[in-house]
Length: 292
Image 1 (cartoon, rainbow, N blue to C red):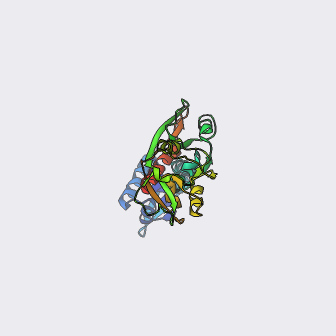
Image 2 (cartoon, one colour):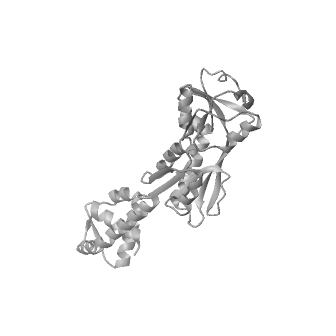
Image 3 (cartoon, one colour):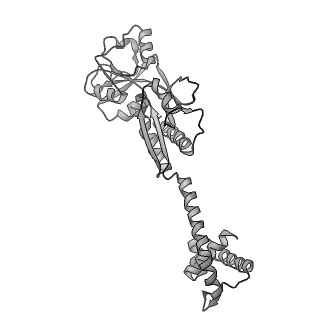
């Protein structure tokens, strides 16, 4: 039996009006009338009689409604289930990431994801690069964000963005007004170091003969920016983190030669990507594009 015909019948039965039923179903009045007529032909019953410009359910119509009510309730439940699947109500996304990506990329990406799927739940955890693969390949996490290259046969990687890093300095620092800072000019500066080393930073400074050493190290680039704002040193950071920290009393200065960092996603090879994972990838790309 045609579902639309049943829905039209219920709407007319409950409102007593084709006009009201059409508004409820977001259909035209002729379309509702046609569905009711088709249902009557299919059943061989007169379901409604017209009295004073109003439809009144016949005895056969009332009997049919009481029998069809259970079927209609089941249809409503199926529609609700389909809506929950479509909106990902109750779905849970588990993300693991490096600290370097956590504060610059993930807040905006999570906001974009929740805008797409308001019912979804998100968990974010930080891990050292050496532990991240296990958390996605064999653990409970669905997707990770890391610095590329990231080679492990248990995961597949997908590029996200390649960016030029900047030098974060206090606004009153001697280098703050420069358009570009040469890495050689950093000799003698006190660096604020990430606890998890970024090989690209040390290699770039070593190439120009500048030691990459500091008195203070911390778990995140964002904390490094906060320490810069306190005048405790300078920090090499990615532009996403600086964007998150831009309200602090610091400035970002381009550096030469450029230090490039490539960020990317990684996924377990033995699990298909869910709708929520694919939405997260899309949301992250939108957030990165907006930052750039």
